[in-house]
Length: 302
Image 1 (cartoon, rainbow, N blue to C red):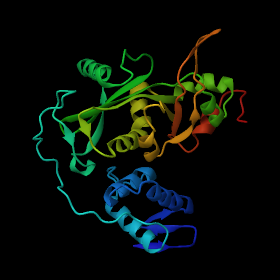
Image 2: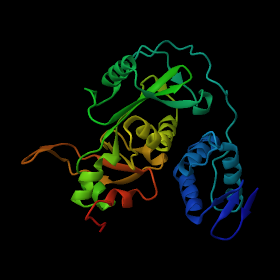
Image 3: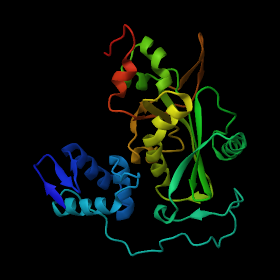
Image 4: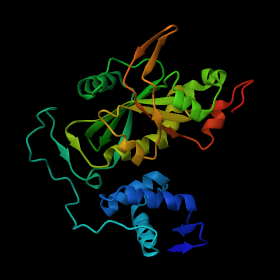
């Protein structure tokens, strides 16, 4: 049941939605008109973190909520599409010519639950490194310092790889957004974590898989990093090359586009190198992340 408690908020299935959240839902529906209703509901659940106690998205409840918002004239849902096969059929196509793997081409809902599996075993680390080196556009020559590898899996299938690593030392638009002093940055930079590799394998073509994975990553990065390294990160960052990608999956997963890098990279004092400007995307892992990142002896946030 949906109850309108005021012009400012709605209540649905026991959850109160603020005016800002209603506006975000309406904006998401308007921004993604090509999605099927179920996929749209899954995206809205990812944005709002609307899940059961076991972490499953409340898609049915969200569909009801979207239909009631449509009835109230607040949004327009896409037309209902004819039903299609629910499960992935055994692949009849030949193996992918690029990867040599059986293709995975189906709807997200047709997969077994998609999971992020932390990679710690040395043999699995070697496999992860080889796959990313082979298929990621930037290649891979190893990770140093703080880092955490994941395989993206669905049942016994591997669908891709994710790497979290140390943050860039200085990024003008990020540092302005945080508002920290140079001292606070030195002391708290380790609590900013960079999504430095994100790869869906070439033989995997599953719409909305990338944003679904990024939603999971934001929900569990703090706990995984704490378990592996002994402290919690507060902010995720990543850089996207606009010559090749638009960052759509990050936007759909609720990341914020701040702007672009300058294209000047600091190699060491007195020296620099040129690179192509990259989009800078951020995902806070706590509501007070900026205040906590700015906290350092003798520092104050502007």
